[in-house]
Image (cartoon, rainbow, N blue to C red; front, side):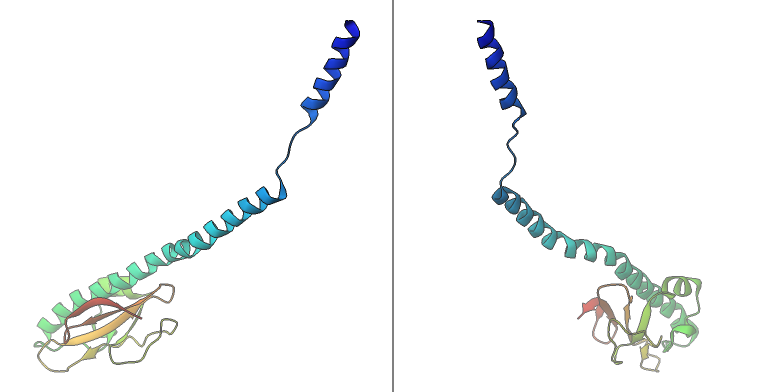
Length: 154
């Protein structure tokens, strides 16, 4: 009897040492799932990292609109046609990393702005501009002629 129990211990010991691993097919399935998740999530994460730069551009645009109100009241209703005419702490603080061009100027997301505004030059308070960040995802238009208020343009 003693021999039998010793022999059965050996078999159990060997069986306990044997660990069944994952098959190649199971590993490939897991890698495929991870790859699909990465393909879906990475572009979204990049977009999330650029969103604060778009908000900077919008804050600059809102500072320009606010400064234009003051400028127009000081200049008989004529809107400024250059950003440096709106020399306020809000505009200077919000627009130092943001690009601004007149609405009729051709501009691309990757190009620096000219810091100009499209203005009628008359006492009608009409002006328009595009604003964007070089590190953001979009360009926004503010246009008093058409009523567009910070509409994203592609």
